[in-house]
Length: 486
Ligand SMILES: [Zn+2]
Ligand SMILES: [Zn+2]
Ligand SMILES: [Zn+2]
Ligand SMILES: [Zn+2]
Image 1 (cartoon, rainbow, N blue to C red):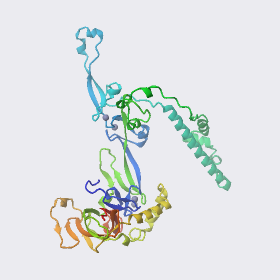
Image 2: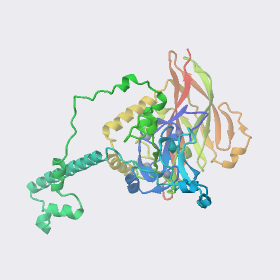
Image 3: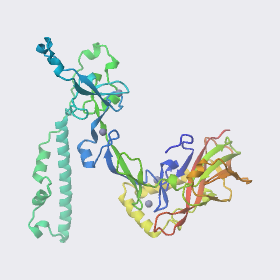
Image 4: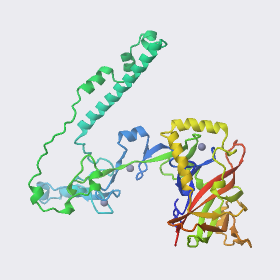
């Protein structure tokens, strides 16, 4: 949902300190905070093929190496390949060809091949025989290094197993020293090996043998010499594959276009996103891969007042210029709004609406859970937040309490706007208001002109059983007003 007209001139400061356009932000209705892709958890919900829309559980997707078994991409231009049908004439045997009517009894058979509608590559180009069925049945190629890859996989699995065992043994020893630990054997007569057997885990003997029997690769200083033809044969670049084409099939990496084979299409995922602080879902797509709808879709775009730049005079160092802004209320409730200086915002944590003790506690535990949001990270973000608000221009914020009506989709078609006789309010139209503001630029300033603005707005929470329902929230924005001219 990106704008074509105003890409990133207006950005919002996320609760983690990142600066993003409103279209890439989320809003947690439970913590009442803006969240971005960096400060939420991403979870894979389902795997599906974007071409045939088949969906599958993750275990099956892993088995198929995250590729669809019936859709292919063009190995030359990566466009999706289409299946084409032709009629194959039955081959004439010599006796049939001798002139009797036996040929007519045999019907022409439908045969299928793959073709790219973009670059005209076909599976016939590389000598793949046509198939009698429309989908599936395409010859599968075996990875030339499959045996070695499996050996390596087994070896690393064995190492992981061994390390786990060593860790367990160490912990057992620690407890045994304290004298508080009763081993399973004491209690049940079950040995560790027996327990592993029951659980279907490899025994420590097989782990040891897998490690012992592994033959590591050996680097060699001697390199085979290039054959003479590399120096003498004229190169035809039309026959050589590009780097992208080679890497599309990492197992084979064909160097000649005659060896390009159809590439099985990679699966896409549907993911749901979760607030790290409260574990509630911020987005949850519908399971059906054909649907583009969401069951939960808490985008900032639907909850945080939106600011767009209508126009801005060129910013001059040491001067004041006029900035026209449009503010809109995306929520289904009337919204009171004030413009503030970012410096006047209450410090995070000091806000009575947000800093409820239980929210803070759950924030702590989920921070521990999350990947690497340790204390240092949080500290860096605080610094970043202060830095990003250090704008080169100062926006003069009039002390004005605005009331914006709720969003009304039908009002989008209204042409009439009410024009206020106000110096600041230019016009109003349903849930939108246009403001005339002044931007001050310090003398001697140079470079990009940016101005920071803070919004204070009343937000009504629609979550049932969420008390209190009305909250005063804040959002900090960074506006890009072009370059400062001298
Ligand atoms: Zn964030
Ligand atoms: Zn598919
Ligand atoms: Zn192609
Ligand atoms: Zn939350």
